[in-house]
Image 1 (cartoon, rainbow, N blue to C red):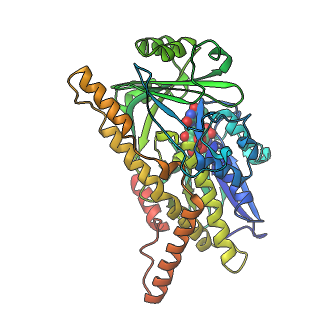
Image 2: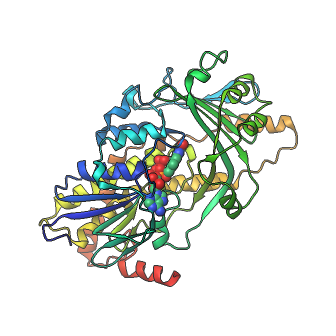
Length: 457
Ligand SMILES: Cc1cc2nc3c(=O)[nH]c(=O)nc-3n(C[C@H](O)[C@H](O)[C@H](O)COP(=O)(O)OP(=O)(O)OC[C@H]3O[C@@H](n4cnc5c(N)ncnc54)[C@H](O)[C@@H]3O)c2cc1C
């Protein structure tokens, strides 16, 4: 049910990578001529914050499909000169133990690219009209009724529409409104990230590799890479034995760290890592949380989630940016298919439901596979080695046996969408033929979702 002029009003919570990409996809990919997209963001300003973010070939291809071409240039992002996405080295000996590779990425612009998150965000922002982004709007809760959706903000105001997309990150209040008992789990790691001018290290550290490097140690890793626009990043980590609740109380996301702590922690590593920590001017802290796969991505036939809100994978395999972009493209494709393939211009609840179910069918199994790996890794973190030699042998074996993640980094979201579509059409056909009920649909039915929510309040 749309407005009298048949405009579909879509509310997006969050103007991060997923929120902006969704706005672009709905405006460009969906082909909906009468769609009114409004974005609500808690931040008072859209600043270039965050540290480094990587996009793998799937994310780079999707950026191009969304028309965000400036982010494909060598100026904004960095691709290693060897064409290798990432080189894995031993923490002490500095020996190369293994490398990531691209399998089917003929266009070098689609090779794994590393950005300052702010620069990627700014590239997306160029394609979103500023007057549809409402800042200082911190979502407190979300609601869906038969007639529409609402966002309620901490300043006491509300926004209403026909469809709601929760793109409000790993702690999504939209998700919590529909699944109130959803909990994140602390992985035990806190990341220390830094981005700074590359001139602070280039020419200052002998034999500094040109490619992106990942040194693995028995417990912690260290990552270093050039980024676009002459920036450089270093990322270290430490184990924190505290509980999720204690971490939440004491370390906020993106808070200032202590660079001396980073230097102390990596002082016995090889000379390149040691020198990189000495030249790193400051660090910010990012406690690493992850959550289980969600039982459904569609609530009340009008609400869905996108990006980290939908799959709280905690940054594993540096996949978050690419997944968010692919989610956004899949959502645009789903609306395009449902609206174009049905008669009548009206955006009925049934059409919205079908588009969201198709989106979820395309993306949910893919991200659930990643979440299974993430949670297995969190559980298997304790080492059983009894000597340095044993520990080192186990480390080298682990580095050599790194799981192949090509299914993730070269995922073809359009092919996945077509497969989901074929499957849905076959299911619908079967349902019609056998006159079955709709028990196999990918969403929680509207009434059931509301009951779930009410029962938890
Ligand atoms: C400030 C910041 C810095 C980051 N830095 C890095 C980094 O250095 N490296 C990296 O790999 N990943 C980083 N990430 C995470 C990364 O951007 C995501 O994993 C990935 O890009 C998926 O994006 P997303 O849009 O789903 O989530 P996010 O990028 O987290 O975006 C969520 C958006 O929703 C907004 N939001 C959250 N709660 C509310 C609310 N209650 N009301 C309204 N708006 C809300 C947030 O302010 C944010 O703009 C960062 C995220 C943020 C928010």
